[in-house]
Every structure is written in structure tokens, then in C-alpha cells.
Image (tube, rainbow, N blue to C red; front, side):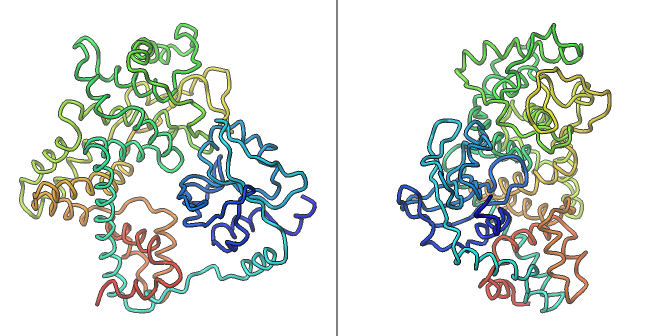
Length: 479
């Protein structure tokens, strides 16, 4: 590290995340100006340091990943130029380094805009200021009253429903209703680490194409096998597989053989260029959460909707379940939807989580075939994930669908069910917000007692818990 021994990579990450680097210093090696609109989300897994950043480069808006290094040569030293996980990088930022490379290239051969920061007194002063910055956020809302806190959280939870509906509307404007729902389902099955390859798969295989192939298939073909063949084939999970007869696990060979047989002519007929297996993240995932099992869950879910389409079927299911007393209808709708979205594992996926080649502990591909231990890996889509899907995809979609169709009953039902859903699994944001809002009053448990309130906490954190937004937050409700 030499000249950088007084400065850490963690410090560089913090300066980037907090946007504390002067725009005067943010200029690429080819002279383009750079502005950080959104620094992105810190990535704790394999791949670039920051995901989903938004930058203005030379007047043009770019969205993608950002990689930071102390030594500019580390892009090549760490072999990022050979790793497709870095193909979405839109900026490489490093400290000025002796013999720094003139150009940074990605695995796909495209150049990466490149910024070299001088390690001068200004940068060191920023680092020292960063070290003394307070960790906890001074929250005026937490000092108001329990009633004000609860009212604000609930109000913002409803705002999050409409915000998600608006985001869904933007997708529908550029595709179809079913494609927008399908893309949301695919991204949900990706969780945090595999959202991007699942999104790419949904674009590679539009839902209308998938459903059309299933509807046109001969009765002798099992739709479940055909759907698996299409999804796993396009995802790249059949690539580099040995012939089924050479797979030592007989159950695995029996699973793969009919699907591979269907996929090979389909790939040629549909002209599908599969994703690469390396695009999928296995690193630091427990086997039950491997993308192979998540894709099996998506397959099991789509199989329930291919005859009638996604949104029409869901709206009909939703309205039919509501034909009970007002007191009981929220529970009835939730129970029916969960019955659809919870997908138990079949005999194969109950005891398997992948097929050859296996993923090593570091996410690298090994050549030895995978022979899993005989154990139960659980549901493909469990209750917690099903509830997440309802909150983040299905209910916003149905709310917007009701609005567009002029169906106030459907729209009101969607909001009613959203307001009555039980709490979801806690995450880092809801945990931190509970702590932040309960410093003066004992509201930690009650402000996260339902899915609606948890969504309110997330929306508050994302839109209001930042400098100069406190007054707007306090004005959200009059209570």
C-alpha cells in the first residue's frame, strides 16, 4: 500500500457512501465531470463494492455498480476484468497510484470510466471528519408523542403502498400487466443477492412466451417438466452438465434427463441465449437459499397461473375470497393467497439444492458432481417469503389494477388486506428504526406490529431519515 498506509479502503467506502468527495476531484481520466446522484447500496457479498448507484457522467445519467480500490492496479490484480459479476460496473474509483493503468476493462471487453483521487490533505481531512461523525441519528419525531409516532408510521406505510403501485404503473407502461407482475415475482425470488440475474431471466423469457409454450404443449408433456426445462435451461443451470447417465445420483439424473431433452430443441427453436451459471450468486448462501431452489419455486408458482394469466387470475381469486362477512374477509383473502404462494418442495427439491457442477464455499465452480446429503431443505416458497411477495408485489399491483379499471372495490380491498397483514420478518432497517423511534417512549414493539407499520418504517428511513428532511417528516401528520 505504501503511500496509502494512512488511509483505509473502509474510509474510502465511507467517503463515497456519504458523498463527501468534492465534485472538483471527481473527474475521469479522460476528462469527464462526475456527479454522485445516488452512491448505491453497500455490497457485503462477492462482486462490486456498491450496487445500483446513479451517476451523472459528462452530463449523461448512468445506473449500475461502483468498485473502489486504494491501488488502481487492484482491478486487474483481483481479476475483475475476468469476472462477469463486474460487467455492470459504471465507475472505478481509486487513489492515485504509481503506474496506474490507463484504461480499465470489463470481462465483456467494454471500458469502465476511471477516476483517480489524489491522497492530499483534503481527502485526509474528510477521513478525520468521518471518524468523528456521530453514529446515531438525532430524531425529532422520536421526541413528539407515542400517538404522533404511530400515526406517522401508519400514514407512511400507506404512502409506501401507493409508491409501489406507481412504480408498478411505470413498468406496465413499458410492458404488460402480467410481465410486470412476473418480473416482480422473479426479483422477489432473487432475494438480495440474486435479484439482478432473476430480473435478466424475466427479460430473456417474457411471461407471454413462457405461457404460450405451456399452452401449446401436447397433453403427453407434463407442463411442470416443460416449465422447468425452459427456466433452468435459460438460466444456464444445464450448461456443462455431464450426460444424465454419468451422474452418480440416480434421482438427480432422473430429474435432469427429461428436462434437458426438452430444453435442447427449445433453445434452438426459440433462439434463446442462456445466462451463464457464473452470473448467479451462491457465495455465503445456505443451500436452501441457492438460486436453483428459488428458481424451482418460481417454476412451481408460475405453473398455477399459466392457463388464465397472472393478474386476471389473481384479481378473480382476490374478489372470490372476499365473499364473506366484512369481519372475516381480510383473513379469508390472506389465507387463500398464501395457499397459492406457499410452494412446498416436491420429492426432488426436498432433498436437493443444486445439480452438477457444484458451487464451492467461495462460489466458484467445481468439476465434481454434487451428491447432496439426504435431508429436508424445506419449502421452495415458505410463508415468510409468500407474505413478502403479497406486500411488495401482489397488493400494489392489484391496487393499481383496481384504480386503472375503475374498480374501487378491488382497490379498497387491496388496501384493506395490506393494512391487516401480520408482521413480516424483521430486517436491518426495521430494527434500526425501532431503536431510533423508541429512545424517549416505549414504542419499539408496537411500531412494527404489522406489515403496514414495518413498511412505514422502511419508507421513513429511505425518504426522510436524512439531513434537512426532519421538518417534512414531522409534517406528515397533524396528530
